[in-house]
Length: 151
Image (tube, rainbow, N blue to C red; front, side, top):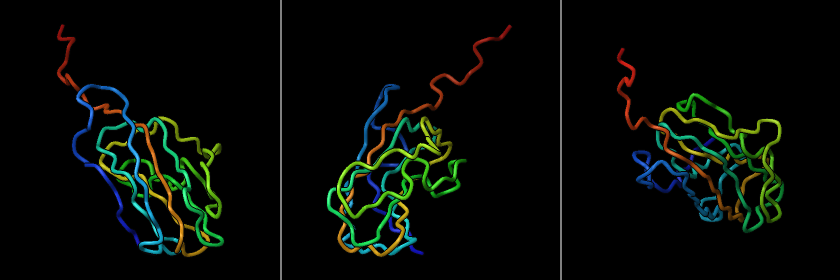
């Protein structure tokens, strides 16, 4: 099993200067590196102290025969290890938006330390597919972490 990094953005800081949700996306062409079944594709960086409000994927170019995708966080540094918390076993041999995983339903997932949103490739090697991964995130790090009630 291999892990291939295709992330964009930084794991330090946030692109927003105020506490507002922001949208990030990354388009990955699997035909350029042919991920095998069981490979992890790191797609989006998630800075520490971030809430991921939602995430998903869209298959833009159909993948090779029998390929499926999970979308989640495969690392354990986030305090939440769930490789299919947003998408589970999506048949990537056709195009379109993958439905949310109703079983796990990882809405508003808090990421404590920097991590990545990943695709876990299943079923077969993907030599043809192109996928767009997206997420809506918000910085939840403290802006005033001193005690305000001193009496």
